[in-house]
Image 1: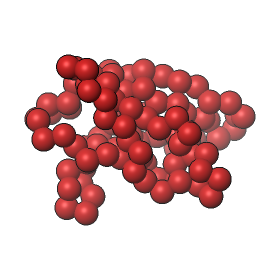
Image 2: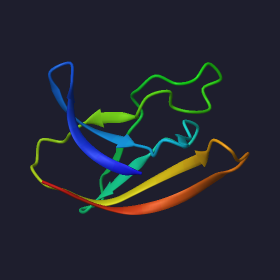
Image 3: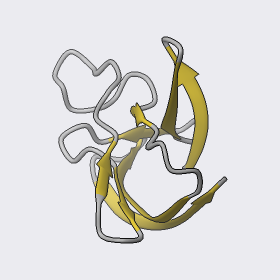
Length: 94
């Protein structure tokens, strides 16, 4: 799992990219707890027909302030398992 900067429709975004054998749980959308206390939720992106998983990497418009630092909390499920795991990953993007 990794967080990447990109663009979507001409806007700067942040997106959560899963590994090939992993699905991101859409019922508990990824969230970045930024230093300073605000939270950025990655809720944009197409979901599966049952709304259980993201069918494409979830994303959010990137905040205007330059550097993104904090903790990304994300729930993911391996495609060969029937359970999801939660993880907290440090984030530091320029």
